[in-house]
Amino acid sequence: MKKKFSESQITPENVFWNRRKFIQNFALAGASASYFATLPVGATSQDLSGDGLKDELSSEYVITHHNNFYEFSTSKKKPAEMAKDFKPGKDWKVAITGEIDKPGTYTLEDILRWGQVEERIYRFRCVEGWSMVIPWSGFELNAIINKVKPNSKAKYLEFKTLYDPKVFPGQKRGVFGMHTLPWPYTEGLTIEEAAHPLTLMATGVYGKDLPGQNGAPLRLVVPWKYGFKSIKSIVSIHFTDKKPVSTWTDRLPNEYGFYANVNPEVDHPRWSQATERRITDESFFGVKKIPTLMFNGYSDDVAYLYKGLDLRKNF
Ligand SMILES: Nc1nc2c(c(=O)[nH]1)N[C@H]1C(S)=C(S)[C@@H](COP(=O)(O)O)O[C@H]1N2
Ligand SMILES: [Mo]
Image (cartoon, rainbow, N blue to C red; front, side, top):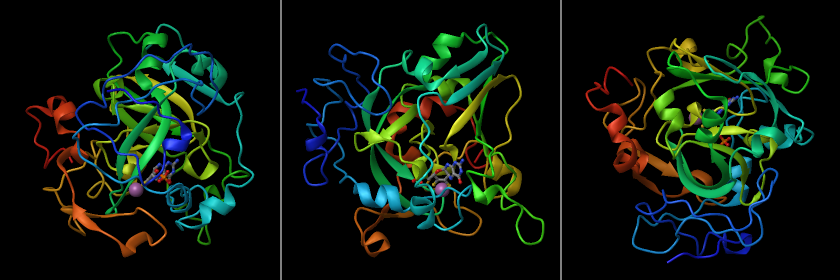
């Protein structure tokens, strides 16, 4: 049964999602170029009924006020306030380069014509041990891949966040001339992971444009991987035959690997990954501690990508 998925329905009380059926996409009625997060009126989304895993949505407040965005601050509370004036528009530019037939610098307005914005409710699991359930708006990264036409040398995609210390004070040198992280923030995926239908380029949350603190105007969401893979405020996508070095892997290679698949059986060297604290409302960490699921609960959809790979070594 398909249900209308209007903004008013997206409330913590009544929205649940169906793990088995959510991968189905439904045609958007009269989809016009809808900028950012807004679904065209009358759009349908994934089937929300049924007997799938029923996870309560995290509130809009916690999703937008408990952030990891080190370009602003290492504090989880500060990005919401610090990002107040960071409101990029549809002239935001993304350089798409490398082993593709159609390289170029494209505006967000261009890119939004290639894919269809839809709602996707995903679990989101940070490597630190907290998680949320987030109603994203976005389009499949695969829409970009299809448009720019990778050649046979394109084995990986490398993404970069905007480097601009005027916007992001966290990118300035710290007290001892040290950066918190090597900037710009960089992430990577295999082309198979990038083309997977679950892999989203998010443009919104709770039916609204993505706030600055959540990675406006365009960020990656890879729901079966730890949150640090989901790079924010993307300005470049490079197709390459070389495995990209992720920022956190560069910083601490023994703790954060390239794959970063959610895996309750492979502990972080400094803590267990068997459970997580589900952040649902403003009590933040006061609430549930629940078991972490293999591939964050998306095994049926993604396990085949890692057949034959030793997940302990390739963490
Ligand atoms: N550019 C950039 N992207 C980033 C980060 C960051 O610090 N900078 N933090 C990552 C981490 S560790 C997590 S858990 C998620 C947090 O996303 P959220 O703030 O929207 O919940 O963003 C990821 N993407
Ligand atoms: Mo994270």
